[in-house]
Image: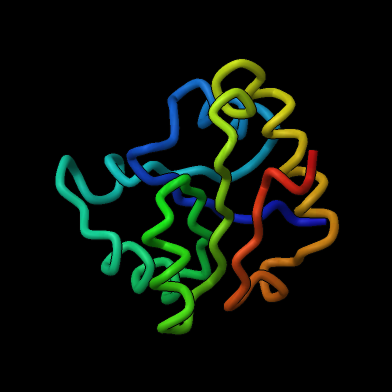
Length: 116
């Protein structure tokens, strides 16, 4: 199955981003794409146009996702999950990706914590 394309916002630690890349995900950081300053609503709209799923722990994306079309939002809340064991967190995303295709993620908010 094709891996999801992900945009990780500035709240996602580099160690988690690195684990995702080493697992085969196409990952771009918000800083790489937009520079130092990025606006959450613009990120979500841009990702909708490019078919890129947003990975975040910022609950503002969940609220915004209920107000507009988007390519998908993956939300996580467990700090230990992403910092203490980023490989396990990346594995959870692999499991989630087995269930969701790129098109299947459209207008979906999925909680990564549920895929451990």
